[in-house]
Every structure is written in C-alpha cells, then in structure tokens.
Image (cartoon, rainbow, N blue to C red; front, top):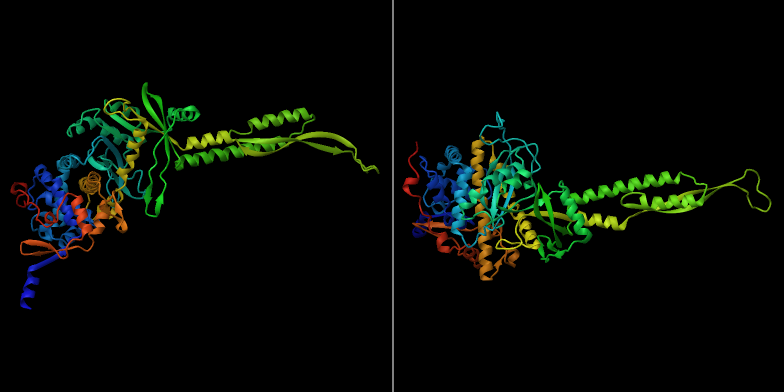
Length: 573
C-alpha cells in the first residue's frame, strides 16, 4: 500500500488530448525560436513560450484569452513548452506586455518571418505556385475610440461591412495571402471599414518584394483573388506579376464575352468529381469553359467564360426579376390591346401579328382575332335569326415565354468570367480548365476562418487598445497557419505514400482534417513520473496513424521541448 501511495505521489496526470501533437509540430515549424530571435524582451518569460501557449489555447477550444492562466493550469507546461512555468506567469499583465512587444516589432512583419520559417521546414509540402488572397472581418464587443484623423497610424476598430452579419458590432479585418490553397504566408490586420479593393492594392504594391523572400521572382507565382481586385489601380499595380481573378459584371466586357460565348463559342467540359457532405454523397457542379478576350484600360487580357449548373443565387434572382418585369409588361400590353376594336379583320390580324412579335422581351402573346357582333334592337324575327347591326374585331390571346430568349438568359445566369494574364505557353502556362481549377481553390482560404472568429477571444476585458487587437491578429494568423499546415502535411504524406487514414466513423479517407485529428485524441491523458512522461493508456493504432502522418513519433510527443536560449529572455523589469 505504501509503495502504491508513493508512486501516486510521484505521478502527475494532466490532460493531453491533441496538444502534444500541436506542440511538437510547432517545434518543427520553429515558432518559438523565430519569435525569440526576432523579439528579445526583458520579460521573465520568453515571448516565444507565451505565443506558443496562446496558439495551443486557440487550437484547444478557443477559450477567451483572459482565461489563459486557467488553461495553463490544466496542462503540463513543461511538456508543451519545454520548461516548467507557473500558471500565474500567464496573467493579464504578462499577456498585455507580450502583445505590446509584438505590436512594437510589427505584427505583419513578425508573421511573415514565422510563415517563412514554416515554409522552409516543409519545403516539399507547400506549393508556392498559386497564392490566394482574401480578407475576413473579426467582430469585437468592446467600445473603441474612433481614430482622430484618417492619416493617423494604427488600427481603426470601427463599424464596416460585416462578413459575420453583425453590423451592430465594431470590427477589424484580417487579411492573408495563402499558398498551397489555404496556408497563410503573409498576413496582418486592416481597418474595420477598409474596402477589399484598397486592401488588395496595398498588398499588390509590395507583393514582388515580399515574395522575393521566398525565392519567387515576378512571373514565378500566380496571385488569385476575388472580384474586388479588378480596379484600374490594382491592375496597374500587378506589374509583371501573374493573376487570376473574377471579372465583375459591372464591366460591360463581362456581359459581352458571355453573350458571344453562348452564341457560338468553343466550349470544353471540366471533369466532374464526386463531393461528399455530412449528409451523404452529392454530385459536384458541372463546369464548362470557353476562352475569349477582353480589353480593359487599353490592355488585352484572357477571359475564361465559365458555365456552372450550380447557378449563382444573385444572378438567378436577377433573372427572376427580369422575367417578372417582362410578364407584367406583356400582361399590360395584352390588356390594352384587348380594349381596341377594329373595323376590318385584316387590320386586326396585322395588330395581332405585331403584338405577337413585340409584347415583351421574354414573353410573346399568342393572339387570335375574334368577331364581336352587335345586334339590332327590337324583338328577334320569328325565324330566330337576329339582325347584325355592326361587326367589330378584337384581339384575344395567352402569354407564353419566348423559349429561346429565356433559355439564353438562363444559360447566361449560370456563367461567370475569370480574368487572367497567365500565358498560354511556357512554364507558367495554364489552359482555360487549369485557370478554373486554380480559381476554385480560392474557397480553401475561407474554410477555417470560423473557428478563429469567436468574439469571446477578442474580449474587451483584456484587449482594451487597438494596438493589442493588431497583435492578436498575429496570434490568430499563427494559429491558422499551424491548423492548416498540419492538415496539408497529413494529406501530402498520404498522397506520396498512396495510403489512407481512418476518418469519420473509421471510414478510410485521403483527406483528413486537423479537426478530425483532434477528435481522435479526446480523453488522452499524460502522466509524469520523475523526469519522464507516459500516456496513461497506449495510443491506439488509429491515433498512431495521425502521429506518423504529421511526421512525428510517439517518443517525440513525450519529449520535453527544447528550452529557449538564455539570451532570448531576461529578468522582469
């Protein structure tokens, strides 16, 4: 009994779940090392360890940042951070000073250093050929003073177009440039009321210089963005860089090329691939493409007209409005025509023919000429034949859709136009179908935004100044980088090995997600006995699959992370 008691006294059990995998992966990325090298501080706790724990917390359930001390008390900080740290070290004062240090260094610049190190750590897994840009709004609950003047520096947390559908809350924007579909390589914060057009221009102005750090010259990568990129200033700022974007229908050229493509263009069909949703299997949208050319500001670009059978909802609503307006116009025209009387059948027939041709843009009137008799007054004769006093002719008809015109309109409603300057020959050449495939990857940048946009993370109790909000943007981007890179590494491992991994309901899959991985480690505990860590129960074969897919080992998960160099942290001021 005494031996068992002594073993229990020496043992310290804590929740592990998927955190040791994330911590080991962060070591491979070099997160803490890069931060400590870039931002030496006088804090007793090095900044790299603070950021690492904040990222672990963000990827462990997204508790509010002001509860980081409670989170630290629930985990083994020595296993995850490489050194034993008291939970009390992660108080509001420490976190506030950490965020201020990040802001003073430059949150965007620091993130680019972290992303560059991560890309260097996984050179075979990150494809830098296509770079996708997007922004998302992050709502906050607190009251933030308005910036005194537009020219003042610093982040403006204010009201703007809310992508969260919360116009009642102030917000800031997170902007990011992603490689390999959804891995951030550049990012930062922008004013809450900044337009995507202006944000695109700011990125494009420094794009060549930023990508040169990754060894990419102009023409060696393709910038992929949504329709907000298409402005004269942004197209001019592209310089020698390649791009793929969506041409908005506010440009007359978009309507023109769609009409010409539908009238007689050479279309090519894209291959269909089945997509699986949580509710079961469903068919993917069927696409076909037709290449045309457009001229914008005296420059000629490639235009890829794309037709999808999954019609754009906004264009479908426009179609319905046009059809309703056409039907209303045809109805009024028919009513007016029916009130007109003709003395001659030939005149009535001519009017009917004219009405059939011109009733409304998308509706025709199938007209007939009917006699309208007026009989003489008085009692009818005994033979029963009433005397006709006069004969007039009126129009009667029914309304029908002009099938050809409406079908052309429906086809046009399913079309959108991609604008690009990517060449048709050479190393960076793309066929129209490849242009479409590159643009379709744009949705990947938006997939994992939701878990980083919980307003509780950005609680006003802790983040009282816009400077700290901007530094928080660095934490969110670092967490997103880690989350997406883990998913990408797992999928690349399975692609190269030709293997599958146990997914939802233990069904084999080649496309695991980081969230899927995190659910596999629910309930996993770790025990420290002396200077060693052990899982309280051996990892299952399913769990070991995910460990190997991340390029890790069970031994690496239970090895204390490398402690930071002494010069990276000093004594508390």
